[in-house]
Amino acid sequence: MGESSSNINIDFEFIAGMVVKWYWVLLIPLTMAALAGIYLIYSSQRYYVASTVILVQPQRLPPDVVRNIIAEDINTRVSTLSQRIKSRTNLEKIIDEFNLFSSDGSQDMYMEDKIDTLRRRISFKVTNGRNRNADSFAVTYKGTDPVRVTKITQSLASYIIDENLKLRETQVLGTNSFLEDELETMRKKLVKTETELKEYRERYMGGLPEQLNSNLRILASLSERLPHAREEVRATKLRLDAVRQKISKGPGPAGDPGAGPQAGELERLKEELRVGLERYTARHPDVRRLKAAIAALEQQPATPDDAPEGDTPPEAAARPRGPSLIERQRQEILAELAAEEKEVKQLKAQIGVYKKRVEDTPRREQELLSLQRDYENIRSAYHSLLGRQLEAQIAVNMEKKQKGEQFRIIDPARVPQKPVEPDMKKIVLFVLAAGLGLGCGVVGLLEFLFQTFRGVRAVESATSVPVIATIPEVAGPVRGRTLFWKRIVPLSGGAMAVSLLGVFLCLAYIKG
Image 1: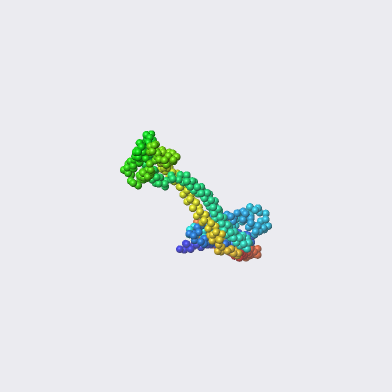
Image 2: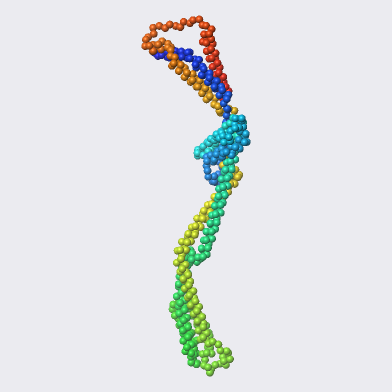
């Protein structure tokens, strides 16, 4: 325990002796550092910082009512605005407006250097919210004049707000213009496709896929009607052959009313009626036609051609002779045969047409499906663009009425009272550390070069011989010159060093 105490005393004695011996070496660097600190305080340019906080206010209308069509997020827009603010054009306006760099030392600067200096003095600090989007951001400007710094900061904030409105309005107007152009192009395509679809339907009307069932029914009806028409032609030809045979045989004997051509035709019609009733019902058109012909033929009186030449009545002889009954009947049958043959040809032609329509139905269906698919795609795209264009118009009106997302100043810039540069605390720490460090270094060097024994312990450690006794220093009479150098000069130097340190600390406190 006693040994530890002696070690501590020896160390303290060593340090105290070294300080007493070389204290003036410590005071000189400390005094020089204090003088350098005072010079730094007076010569350093003071910079002030003004800041304004801008809040990102979301759009006032609900997003489900009016959708935001601005593609970029707020972080990208803030970055874009910061680049616009730091652009050369805007910085030149700020330099001319606030007469920056007009001092004697800055007039010879190039414009590029002025712009780079001003650009470094402007800074942004973005505050992100929970959704990682910017909720607010601060605009900061650093300068030498606190009033001018405040005005420039306010100008930057106003410029940001105006540029944000212009940027959003430009984006929505550009989007609206683009959608209008695309909508007009799509409308022309839609009209063209509608016209093609209409022309296709008009060109192939009757052979469209939706008319297939109707065409099949008509084709079945025509196919069913064709055998009947052919049967009618055959029957008419038989009638014509019978009439021709009667004409070739000549008139029948006189006084036989039943041997004339009218009786033969009546019998033939009755025979055809009997055959027709066996095949068809009484409502069939052929049956009705035969009945009507028989009734008309029974109502006709006997003609003069059926009587002998010597028995011609006077009133008949007085009438002009015209075509005979058998000849008129032949002409009627020929006309009827021509009409029936024409009907058969028409039925065949119609059957060919409807067969062609039915056969072409699959191909028409594929062509029509292709046209309709193109039409539906273009129509869907048109309605989609129309909806977006209406939303863009609403967004344009919203931006013009300033109902969209906006920037609002929540903390305006104020005139700064305390400079941010130079930092007095750092200067004080640097000056004291430099003075003490330089002094301690010089003392250590001198102590290494001029080694001495301080205390009994130092002698015993160096010689390994125990010290028996110590002789105290005998003080002699103090002379004037010795008193001056050993008393007055050290005290005066110490007082001056302490005074300079005090002045340095007071100035640092006042300025900082």
